[in-house]
Image (cartoon, rainbow, N blue to C red; front, side, top):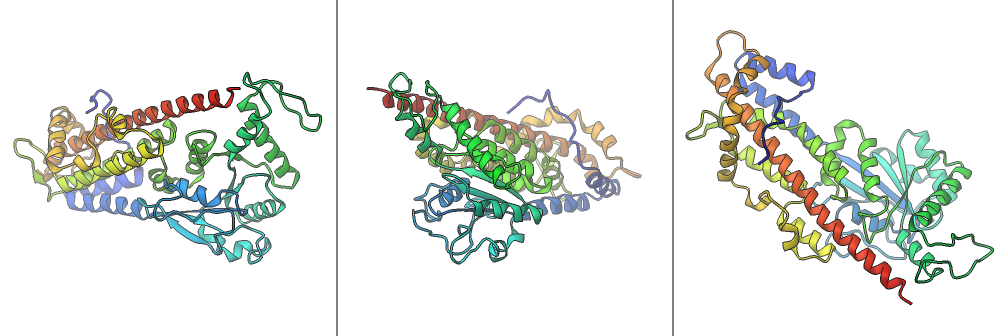
Length: 433
């Protein structure tokens, strides 16, 4: 467990704090817990709907699978192919977080979906934002679609897919040392191979074309289905989160693959905002006293919270097995850097053990807590007990969250190191005469 040097009392939204103060001030922890529980349940019911559209063969269905953390061959994956496989808007709920749904939309401009009626046919209003995908140049239909999306006040993002294929194609024009084999007057290429220059050229080409066609000031993200950790996929994830209303960010964040340290940090920060409410619910009047400790809590609630943290950061047997399979690594290598228990190892006994570790450090906050939430009149026994129980529970959850987030970073580093190594091997083999 992490140390307690950085422990501090939680910062709570003012309107929620007033409701909790009123309830606890009357000695009514049940009411306070009910308010906190309602806030948590409302957060779990928040939905996010992402629309993905693009021409046939653009990689649209593969992208739908990727953002849901699935391979194209996995059960429940969107069907892929060179022919149009999506004939009507099709919902694909996230396999672990069903309140997040990715919608595979038919390509605009197909016979059944003309540009002027497209948004009405696909029920425009239900989506939080649109992702428009192309593996070549974006079309006038795409531009017309974005103009209508803008007019109706929704967000959209351009994704240029299959950039790995572009790099492979460009690589053929260079020798083993990365020098241009021969100049072509019709196509200007740098004399020295540069992946970053090629990618920037693709991006600028897309942006200029969209601007020329009236697409405003577009943001274009370059992605490859074969390696989501590379190119712009992590940045796209961050952008989608940042562009959502604040109350929807946690729902999307929990569903996203751990492709960058930035995403992991955003997950941790958002989950921290719920710790206070989880602590209040766990320390309600009906909570059970822990033997040998002056605290009481609902162990079932704590176990559920700890399991959720593991699940959110991919620290479960199934999640690690899938990650190992996707990166062609033994699962033992991933587990070797994990210091926290996995989701399947979380039990009531473990929760009590973690609480015991935090109890001594949390006692010092009992007086602060009573000042933090002043009690009118005599302090009833339940509130006095909560003065120790609540900060103990709070710091235990916070410490565990910090630990699993740190473990997820270490797992990501193992995967990223392997990906870099494989890329270097591939580049070397490609350039061998």
